[in-house]
Length: 102
Image (cartoon, rainbow, N blue to C red; front, side, top):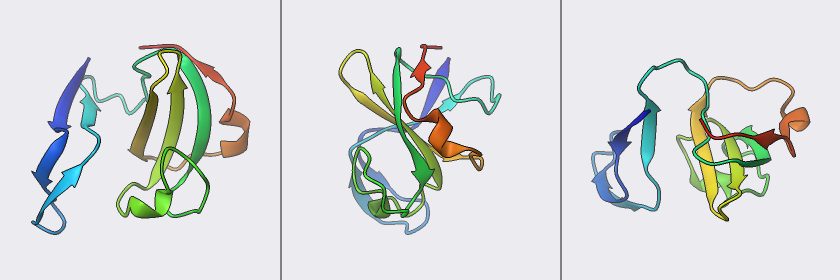
């Protein structure tokens, strides 16, 4: 379903070529459909553009290369952030919407 393109922990950042710690992983869908596929059932809690100042999993301004993103609170109690997305229209209507895994 997904390929891990960047693992959790220390990694060399492509834009700075410096080794830095990251507390997340980067995944890309194997089918490359461009659709966000939730890992768990849950609810969309935030939608935005990096650096917009909205609260989310963390301060979005810390994610310099994140671009458009969606935050999902999974029914498993974990939080999932999907970034590097195409522009998202009608962001506010997505907040609170349920999502299903897959």
